[in-house]
Amino acid sequence: MATVSAWPNNPNPNPNSPSSSPSSFLQVDPNLPPQPSSPATSMSEQSDHLYFDSNPEESDSLSPPSSLPPIRTSLSENPNPNPNSPNSLSSSQPLALLHVSFNQDYGCFSSGTDRGFRIYNCDPFREIFRRDFDRGGGIGKVEMLYRCNILALVGGGPDPQYPVNKVMIWDDHQSRCIGELSFRSEVRGVRLRRDRIVVVLEQKVFVYNFADLKLLHQIETSANPKGLCEVSQSAGKLVLVCPGLRKGQIRVEHYASRKTKFIMAHDSRIACFSLTQDGGLLATASSKGTLVRIFNTFDGTLLQEVRRGADRAEIYSLAFSTTAQWLAVSSDKGTVHVFSLKVNSGSPVTENPNPALESNAAGAPAGSSLSFIKGVLPRYFNSEWSVAQFRLLEGNQYIVAFGHQKNTVVILGMDGRHFYYCNVDDAVDVGLFPSSPNGN
Image 1 (cartoon, rainbow, N blue to C red):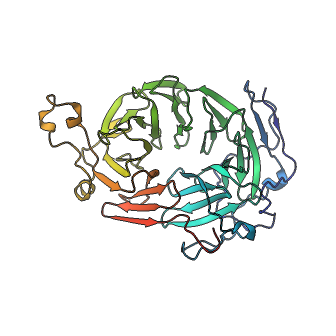
Image 2 (image 1 turned 120 degrees about the vertical axis):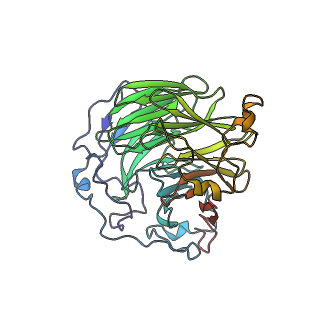
Image 3 (image 1 turned 180 degrees about the vertical axis):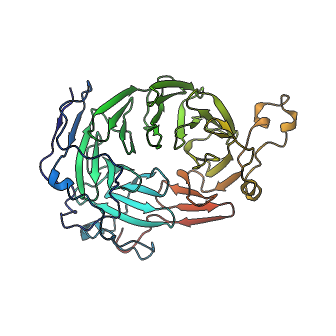
């Protein structure tokens, strides 16, 4: 039986963040559920452990920061936005990047390093904040909740700051952890929304209520070393997607209607998937990496199939645009493909809702030139192709998202050296972690 207990008063797992530390850029989200005044007494029949700090004196200090910390405006200048980082961290030892991920609206991204974590703004690109730890420090996973003060951290690297089987709930306004979720095996992924915390293990998914950290649901999955899982972000409509128990199968949980849907998306192992903000559309790719399929999550209908290429490839990320008009795909071929979608949460839309993007794109046309002999030649010649392509270094790993400006794509290099903000005829390449005199 899992147990819940309060933390000691005012624990400070970050020795570099004393109580006098300056306010962070992260804002207190008024939509977050309140912290419980006292810990709960029970959860469920799982054997993992959960602790939650319910210090009312600390929670009273949750107020928007009065001022912002110094903001990096030029990578070459390399100021240290975290004045709590001791000089011992500024060594010549190179920084190791362990994790990169976007927040829910793609406006920011977080990175975990062997020293701590950092937060970046996408447009304009700049490092906004960092936390460096002087004992251990490795952060293998960082999950933001939009731009609010709460983050989920998991240790990582050769010298992890926290155990790899724990999810630490970090309040950056207080500069400390306010709780933890402990498991018997390594945490593979974490997803946040304003009312839920989702933790992904190798073969299980746990769904917790944010208000009291009570376990609500436990799901068995097939082997999931990548921690694949997505949740919708629309208020009051929770849709969760994770691997099923069979190869190539996707499980969709509609919590509002209490409906579970299984979709046989591919014959091969699932490599990647993405969900629209409202949870209505699901894009999937298999380990072959040639085709991407778009499904209606409610009834499992296959709505569209697009082709990345003919050769096998490893798909690193999929991303829908906010309006679900476009789908971006990144792979180990060093390309990011943008596809025009004909569906919108299951409803047909115009064939090409924005002709300007297609006409100016440097990539292949939306359909094969040989599609007029449909039914005679193999399916390859009837495939739908990308309307835009961005070519990068082959072999590097990239994740992709859509920017807030119209027809823009944000591409992050998982090596920590490349940031691209692209439109149809322009791409800017900026190094995320350049060398500097301070070694930061």
